[in-house]
Image (tube, rainbow, N blue to C red; front, side, top):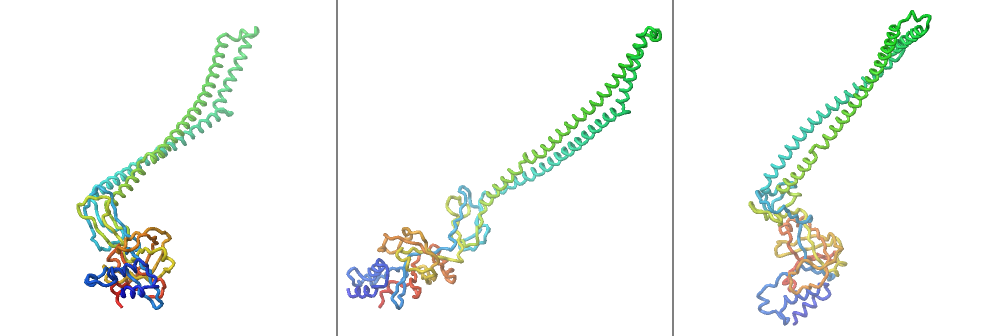
Length: 418
């Protein structure tokens, strides 16, 4: 019991969690407070990384943490139901962004489908270009025909106007009608006068009436022909305009009916499928785990895991009661039996989210009824390479709560030493 009292007195006032202190004492001492032969012969298990006490007796905050890349671990997934044809990397390889990691068996089929779609697109573009040229040619012809029809209508109207003008064909015909009518009137007057009746015969009267009818018929026919010529040209103009509109619609519909857009979308889809069968790295990283083997059928499980290990962090869970004791940029020490050295880092951030701890404590007597906050610890660049050897390793964390003491991990046997 004397050893128990000394140990308890030495730990009093050092701000260590009570459960950890009791766990340390229970492992260092027997149930009756004395070291037994069994406890002397069996080395105690490793405790969390404890803080070396400073001159003022200030203790560190201890916690559990997990090592991981600052950018996280990237699982590489593919669609299930395919088969792995080639694996181009091994665990531990450093890969560059867009470097091919794995090829799937369906790659050859997808590439063939993509090439077929590209060929169809080229052929469709050629046909569309040829159809566009034909449609444009028809449009040009229709435009020319319309211009010609409008010109001919203008000429027909001009001829009609000239024919009606003084000295024109219609004007002369009208004059001829008028002359013949005057002569007919004279003959009729003479034929109806008893004094001059003997000078005019009925045949001459009939002949003059026929001449008047012929002159009127010729004038009317000329007028009708001129007007019909104008109407024909108007109809030609209207026909030419309709043909021009149809040619324009042909040009516009040629673009609308072309399957180019749908083929381009199909090519985009096929390109995505090709990219999916050639698994490339999304970033510069290290291959942390490789689960893919040649001939293996793909499932929903990741083929491999990547991570940028140039900057490592530790995500630790601390008791909410200790948040106020931890300053940003506080020095942190991390240790584990798997590590050949103690890692050094600094507190980068403290989460605002509070919840139950997710990391199981390796110590059976540790509390389970507590609330935790996550802190992110940026591991010093000098120690990132050592930390990168064990991604997701759970480590003992000791945080300098005062910013003055040097924090080092110690074992339970070291703590029990006088």
